[in-house]
Image (cartoon, rainbow, N blue to C red; front, side, top):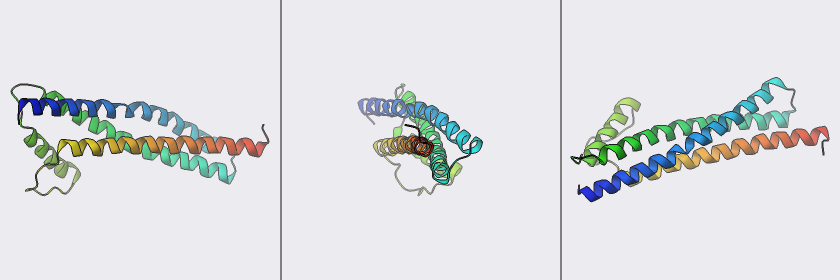
Length: 160
């Protein structure tokens, strides 16, 4: 691979790592919302609709945690690749991606045909950013459910 192409790949990987790193902030907010939902669910007497909304918020919070884990893992991997590919002498990007695919197969049991060419970096970045979008959507559902539970509770108690 030409040095300019490798430099571009390193920049792409670094940008993906930085974007995925934003998932940590989403995760911290989600953990706070999860604690609130669980506290309200476990420590207060709630009506069935309120309990359902709180449980939905907690479930969305758990889904968000899964996506946060995946985003953090991918951020670390892309950061590693960005650092590796920006050094001299130039490493073989295709060999790195292929070795990573084989490691996925070994560690997580993912099916990767041995003769298949490794997935291109751009495809990996698109997949990782899709995980970040899923994380954001899970957080939005978590927040909406929690707010819905609060509003339902306020409506039931007659608060203005």
